Image: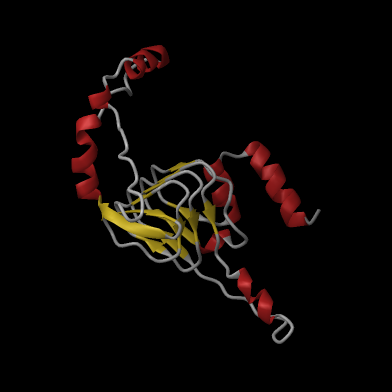
Length: 181
């Protein structure tokens, strides 16, 4: 095992995901919630603003490995891109952020999205590749009627509340339309 891999394995045992990222060189603002250990091979190219939530298994890729195709012709070539995330942004589980991407402030990135382009402030995006869904203001208007105030409840009170929610207070997704219908 290479020194770098050994160092990272040891750090993961003793550091929170945020501490781990900072030790690798990622720059992280204040009041962030970080739940991933996947910072790519150049974590020093990652800059995260304030009040950002990066959920479980989000992956950051700061280089373009596809230059492998050109290695016989150019054996020492690499391509890199900085990743920047603005303030007050949420990145859902298992999303992947590719090199050169800037995600604006007040954004929501859907779970399992692959972010291949920069995202404007106040945007909700999702998919593979990630596509614009709506503004964060529009998203708020769509979901505010489903809000449940649970942060002050005990775990068992929270569970009981959720189990007894009427259907009109839960998210229910529409059926996908079949092609040609």
